[in-house]
Image (tube, rainbow, N blue to C red):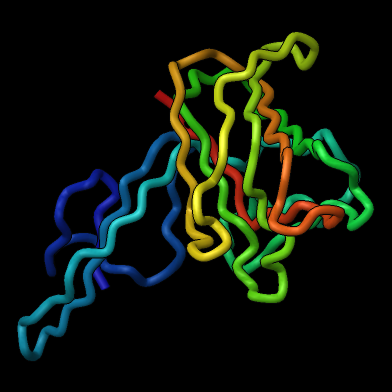
Length: 187
């Protein structure tokens, strides 16, 4: 396997994948191919874009250590708010420093038995001080129960250090909301 981190198309002369790839804290446009040196054929290009690193983020709305599964970069892990959590239910995250945000991404839990906890209606708010909040996005994740893929919502760029994803409704009332991953989009 060969890869690039700058968005260019990888070839057999690009960096060879031999171990986990170290990146900085900024944006990365990772592209990779599988290449067979005997037949000289390569696969189609796989592409994944990564925004700012989540290593310094802190979840401030709960003390549950398992909540950090929403920041681990692994879509196979998930965290759920307590089953008795009343709506609206907030997930509040400190980004560690002020960023220029232009959107957010939400990935629901990916296990079929967790589909009852998928957020269907949401509000997304930002703050620079964790006191004064500004709602920058609100709406519905259309058809998310049947298509539980990354939900991407953009908004007018704004500076913020804190983000709040508020679950207003999920696929089954009275159940705690679930998250596989939450991420931001920066400008």
